Image 1: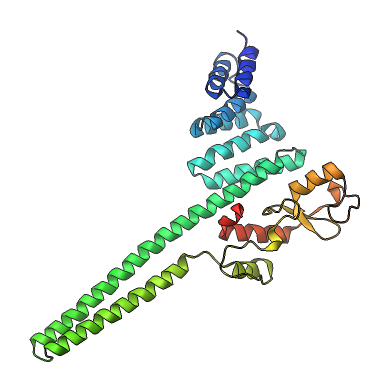
Image 2: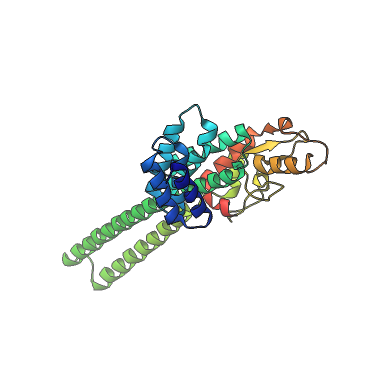
Length: 303
């Protein structure tokens, strides 16, 4: 059996959804003839992604990238994307995002149709990055709250001990003793409630209004509810933007959705005037604002 037939059979098994069999055939191809063929490693990386073998997929994707080398960025684009997909479930979020952005940039340079799919993955990676930060922040808040409540309890014990000592010295009577203890416990409970409310407010992500005003120099008509500001929404897909471009008419769209529209219709979505790729300008200010908003409000990805 030749190397070509191993790989071809692996491709056939993959198309049939028989991923374990495909993995075995790709492994046979690598073992027999293809230790220096990046395509087979890339194929096996994708197969292992389907099998949720994240470490195996990571290893194969890295090997494919190494074999392609820096002079073949277009060919290694998918391997960078596979690596990103393998890293994210392992919680290597920062590297996953970097690899996905690398693949996305290559797609734009080569006009590869995978740009939109990778763009969606970038949003998911940003969401995972936010969730990781938010989980760590809430864990720290809970730890701090427990510490503060413990300090309050210790202070209450000291204050009550002081009352008991005064009672022992007959500086106050039984009625005075009980009244002071009741008042101390009431004050302590009030402090606990105030502190818990303060921590609850701290646990809520930044309000849309404050993020909008700080990030994009404008005030949004929104409160602390989870509302995505209109300027972040692509007018074509009605999804959150992460790489906006602006047309000659001044309207911003998500790059990949506008590219798809131009490819299909060749015109501006709003005015219906002829429109070409080279007429689009990256909206850097809006891109930075979208990025800042998503950094602080990762929930918006699923809006």
